[in-house]
Image 1: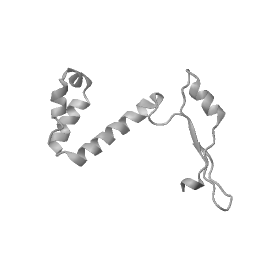
Image 2: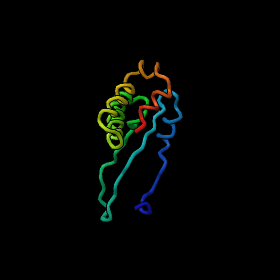
Image 3: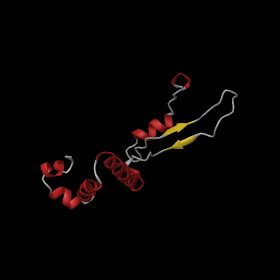
Image 4: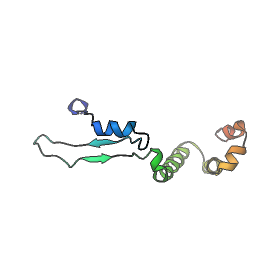
Length: 105
């Protein structure tokens, strides 16, 4: 698949990336099939991890954190880690060694 891909710079994207007012991290994707037909190009100017999309990204990040905690820790330990991790004041007040201890099985 990689051998069939072609990467092309869009000078407008590069300009917007270097513009301190925008700092866009734009990308676009066009899928073209062997018969010459293609999907309409999809452009994403600010991907989900961009600072301008924190409102969109934080809930997804928290959900990813929960999913990965569930892969490793029992429910009670997951809850303890989440309670501290999602409460900024508590987290900032907690000594680092106590926080790290929450991850010990």
